[in-house]
Length: 276
Image 1 (cartoon, rainbow, N blue to C red):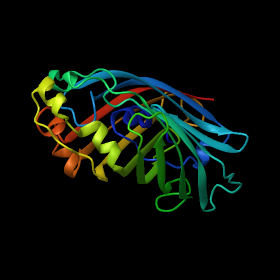
Image 2 (image 1 turned 120 degrees about the horizontal axis):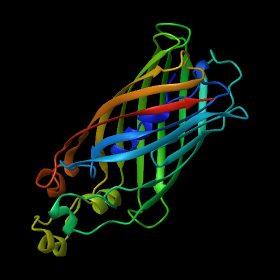
Image 3 (image 1 turned 30 degrees about the vertical axis):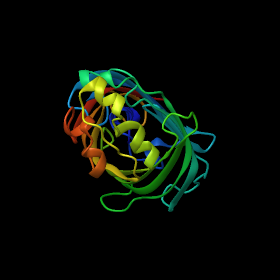
């Protein structure tokens, strides 16, 4: 089964992590709560890393699947009665974007000042299928998520397409791999990656304009979930994983990334999850 813990951990490290299907039969009518720690860049594009706590939850309540990972909650409003039928997914997404709002280690980027927290609302659509390659219980899913800031921080949008595959190795072990990308609006790029003339004086970084829409970056994640009590359908489990994210194009060329940071982002984490 897919524990949400590493999804939560990796979601904190990247602009947005892939929306994954929650239709695997091992997770039906269950709730999983997870806690752990993640080793993540201090901001998206940083070459400084920090250890951060992480929590996550996922499950099925009243026939509706939900996920809470990192700082984002999503709910699938389309009920699925047959776990082996094609799973059409549609629902709301709500969360906050904490990029460059805290724990900035680089002195030059810190001199640019902390940014406001963005409150991002939107939705997602997806499709998934259980029992496709290795067994009756593996799951292949694809989705697209759209969110827009309503708190007047970056005041723009982010679009995230993703593709995920997960399969149980046994009733005690599950693996998941996922790939995704982020496309952002011009005000998003300007807010997080531009350097104003005043900011240049304060930080020593060259002035730079990233006010352009485009692909922010792409990434991939992998995780493994192992039961500590004998069965992933309930009880305590260990989850661990990691991933890679590459900042792209004009955003990678920003001095915030190219001088003070690194376009190549690595992250990982581990923790415990309990399913009941």
